[in-house]
Structure formats: structure tokens, C-alpha cells
Image (cartoon, rainbow, N blue to C red):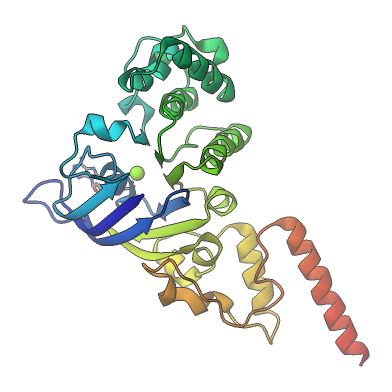
Length: 305
Ligand SMILES: Nc1ncnc2c1ncn2[C@@H]1O[C@H](COP(=O)(O)OP(=O)(O)O)[C@@H](O)[C@H]1O
Ligand SMILES: [Mg+2]
């Protein structure tokens, strides 16, 4: 669904490449996170996917369209794109007009448009604000207006640049559940997030970016365990993984399973974990408690022998 081949990109011929040697493929129905420190090039890479910005070298194909050749309007029918800053996206006078804008471009009937507008507005808690001017809303609300407009089109591919910025915890969970529902119905999702807990909870696969290159690519739980690569990018694993790694490292017999896939993960999307320990498959608090109990029982059993 998204194919990036030997992509390099510079903002102008005199400037250095911001993106370099980028290769990855995202299949239909995948839910993938793109992470990396500020300035790594995440937004620059996402802008390549809707044709707003064209490759300096290499090729980008999304939903079967070569972004170097396709019209932006054609791409917009297949790819829903959420800007990092909602103020770069919103330009209508009311929330309702803003939500309807994308749908008007794909020629939906008035009835279908009303149905989808009401549905997405309700999902995103905007139903009481349809006649409000977007600039009288908070930044978090404007982000949800922009997202509503993108979701209402029901595109095949969703490209989301920090969709939960400006949201409180409950709003963040609500937004991510909506994105997950879209994914469960078959929409391919690529999203940038700086929230490693969100990445772990929602993305099956993660691409890790450093200085305009993808330096790791694999199952999210494995990418987030490969601490050395993460730390190069200034990111920290989610707390539950930190805890699993610390407990695993205290076990004596436990290997650092996470290192097994460091190179295998890059580009191939294949991870192999070395022989592990009871904490290897722990990604939530409930499983963690079970794993600790199991480990304590093992230790107690060994001591009795
Ligand atoms: N419009 C632009 N013109 C020139 N350089 C830019 C532009 N936008 C971003 N950059 C530069 O590209 C690099 C990557 O930025 P960006 O893609 O926004 O990173 P991220 O989203 O990972 O924080 C940064 O060094 C940034 O200064
Ligand atoms: Mg960015």
C-alpha cells in the first residue's frame, strides 16, 4: 500500500539531504508508527506520502499512485493526511464546513455527506460545535476538527502526523481508538507519535528514524526493547518495557533477548528474539504481575530443592 524505494529528499538543491536512503514497504491493513527525535525528518517523510512534496531521488508509491507523477487532488481521494499543526490544514469558516471539505472533493451525495459528518463529529466530541469558527476552538479541538475531516473521507490510507498532540489522556485514548477502528475495518495507517505508550498500545510495527534515515523497523514491542538504538535517537522505552528489561536483566539466566533482532529488524520487518526469559512477552501491567508471580514461584521452588 505504501512503497518507498531509495528515497532521498532535500528542500532545495543547495541544501543537504534531509531524507536519505529510505526503503520500506507497508502492506494493506497494517498499523505502523514512525518515531524519532525532533528534527529527525518524520514530518518531511510523511509529506512525501501525499504528493505535496516530491522525491529528490527515488520513488514513493501510495495506493498504487506514483507520488512523483500523480496529481495531489487524485492522491487526496486515497490518502487522508493529518498535518502536525492543525492550523496548516484548517481554512473553513465553520467546523461543519471543515469536516465536509474533503468529502466534497470526492463527490459524495448530500445525504451520505450529512451522515458521515454527524458520525465523525459525534465520535470526536464536536457535535455541539458545528457552527463555531475553528479559530475559536482550542488547539486540541482544532486537531480533532482536522482529524474529523480526514476520517470522514474514509480513505484507504491514513497518514497522521502526531494525531494526539494537545489532547488530554481521555481524548488521546478516544482518538487512538477511532484510528484503531478505522484500521480494523481495513484502513492502512502510518502515524508519527512521540508518545511511546501510545506507540506500544496501538502500533503493530514501528519504524525508528535518526537523521533522515530509518535505523530500525520491526514489531513495535521489539523495536522498543532495542534500547541502544532507541537511545541513539533520544527516546526511552515505555515504562512497562523498561521494567521488563530491568527484571530480565536481574534474572541471571535471562539473556538480553531484545538484542537478537537488532540487525534482522532493519528494513526487513522481521524480528528474531534470542532465547528469552519470563518477561520477554510482557507488554501490559496484568501480564507483568503474572510474570513476576511465576518468577517468584520458580525462585521459591528452586530454593526448596
Ligand atoms: N520547509 C522546510 N524547509 C527547509 N528545511 C526544513 C523545512 N521543514 C523542515 N525542515 C528541516 O528538516 C529537518 C527535519 O524536520 P522535520 O521533518 O520537521 O522533523 P520531525 O518531524 O522529525 O521533527 C529539520 O532539520 C528541519 O529544520
Ligand atoms: Mg514533525
